[in-house]
Every structure is written in C-alpha cells, then in structure tokens.
Amino acid sequence: MVSTIPLKITFLGSAREVGRAAIAVKSEKTQILLDYGVMLNHIPGFPMHIPPRDLDAVVMTHSHLDHSGAIPVFYIKNGIPVYGTRVAFDLANLLIRDFIKLSGYYLPFEYIELRSMLRHAVSLGYRKEVKVGDIRFQLLNSGHIPGGAQVLLESEGRRVLYTSDYNAVETRLLKGADQDYGELDAVIIESTYADEDHTERTTLEKRFVEEVTEIVEAGGTVLVPAFSVGRAQEIACILAAYHFEYSVVIDGMAREASRILMNNSEFLGDPRLFMNAMHKADWVENWRDRRKASKSPGVIISPAGMLKGGPAAFYIQAVGKKPNNAVFLVGYQIPGTPGRELLDKGVCVIDGKVRKIKAKVEFFDFSSHSGARELKETVRSLGLKAKAPKAGEVVEV
Picture 1 (spheres, helix red, strand yellow):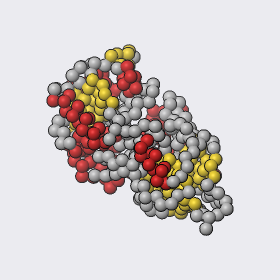
Picture 2: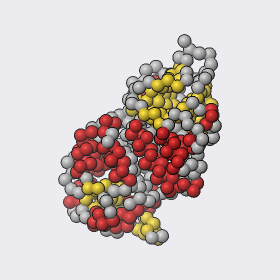
Picture 3: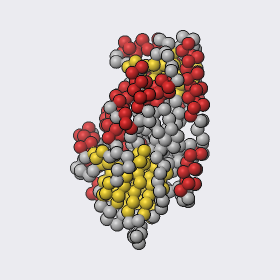
Picture 4: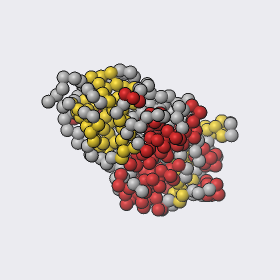
C-alpha cells in the first residue's frame, strides 16, 4: 500500500553542476543522505549544510571525492552509520587522506574524523537489502569505478533509484551497470554527458593501442596521465588484453589503488585479466626508477589525470621535450587545468614558465560515464519524465 505521506528528495548539491554530490531522502520517520562530496576548486566547495542529528544514515556510492570527500564532516561528534562497498571504503580512505594532505587548511575535518567515519562504515555487497527506519535500500553495480554503486530505495510502497555516476557500457576493467531495476516511481540520474556520445569502446581501444605501439616501436615514450582509481587500471588492462609486449610502468597513487584492487578483485569484470596486467607492469618505487622510465621506450601510466600534480607533472618535463614521444590524455580535462591547457594550446607550465610541448599530444575518450545514447535509453526504458532540479530544491515522490 502506498502511503499518503510523500518521500521528500532534497538536492543539496550536484544539481545543474558537476561536483559536490549530496541528496537527502526523507520518509515519514527516516532521513538518509546519499553521498556528500566536494567541488575540487583551490578552496574546496561543499554541499548545502544538513545537521548530522537529522540523519539516520549516509550512503557513499563510490570513492571519488566529488561524492565522498565531505562525508568525514559528520563524524566530528556524531556516529551515524555510513554504507557502501568494502572496496569503496578502502579507496575512499586513500583518496580522502590525500585530499586532507593537500587541502587540509581549508577543511573542517582532519584525519581523526576520517578514521571515525571508517569505524562507522558498514560494508555491503551488491543486491543485499538493508533496512534503516522505514526505508529499505540495496546497492547495485554502477559500472563507474570499482566498488561503485547505484542505490535502489523503497519506502511505503514507493521505489526510487539513484544512479550516482554510472556506466552502462562494459569496459576491460568493469562490467556495465546493473540495470535490472523493476518498477520505479522516480529516478535520480546523472547527466554528465547528456549531450555527448562516446566513441565505441572497442574502436577506441584499438586506435589507442595502435598509436601507442607505433610510438614505442619507433623508440619513443608514451606518458598516459590517468586518474589513480579506475582509469589507470583500465589502461593497463587494455594493453594486456591486446598483448602489448613492451614496457608498462605504473607510478604514483595508482600503485596504491592497484594494490587495493588486487585484494578486492571480485569487484572487477575480469579479475584474471586485471591480475595479468598488474603482474606484467613495472611499479615505480623511487626516483631512480622514475628517471629510468622517462628515458626508456614504453608506456608510463601515472596520476594526476589532468597533470595537476602527481608524478605526471615530472614526466611531462622529460617526455614532453622530445618529438618522438607522446602524451595521451585518457580522461576529461577540466578547463583551467594543465591537461586542458596542453590539449587546447600544446603548452604546459614547467618550472614556472609556459613551455611548448614537442611530444605528440592526443585525447582518447575513455569515459567512465554513460554517454547521451545510454542515458536516453535508460530514461526511455523506465518510462519516466525528466526534470532538472536546482540545488536546494525539494522534490516529492
């Protein structure tokens, strides 16, 4: 029986913007927060405030900071449960620790709050139903990054889906999103690429491997700036799947993320391929390894994905000055980042000076989000009308 009291969905962030995802779902007796992320500016942007005492639980859909980065703020004094997958918590610990290290001056929490958050973490498998007050929910594979989840909620006869970031397309690292939703009354769906389709994955993979091989066989080095979680591992898996026989080097925080995934391989689409890729790769352990890799034919996979720090900022200096080398960008480059400047203008700031990059620069759209075609198909299959809420808006279901 459907209650006469509606579910109230409040958009505290990420409405008509990218970043600081935060959505509160309130029933007659219970309120659950879906994500609480940050906007990754120089001074991090936070979602709208919600008092911790008003919450019964938090659900963290995945480890990316735009969905997880502000959750520790609820653990300054309080101890509400936070739900997610085991690997999502392991990866969030890695990413939020780095976030505190780099931006701690601007944050209202420290490592102690992160530790408290992790003590209150409740790890769930996919499709395991949980009841909090009068709301039942379960996590579904999102296909976005390892451990990423969609949230299917039900209360008083109403069923609501929050896709979070999701990818319906299978990749070398992950299976596509689980879209066996059943009947729904509402869906909160991402729209990052609502107006843009992605290149077909196999076509993109083949072009990437062919161009990498061409550079390396001519004695060049290919720098692949990649996000530590997900993209770095996918690139390694693509090279392994196509039997790439030359050197592949993994550096930076991608090493720690890869180790976490090696201990959580059940969350991956093809664990055998992943383990093969990891065992084939060389792992940079020190500056001697780093300098050697920058001068040797092969592929270097290293954060930061937008060249904003990380070992990639070192590699761009060595790799970028030779025309027989290449820099292949494999993720979206936000305007104003070094990666976007490189893509648009062919330059990079090195030692405080704007320098022309002589290496070949190219972009490969290895997105972990559904494109316009998949988004429209999801909405069409559910038979629901679309609405674009604003931050602060309350929608009743």
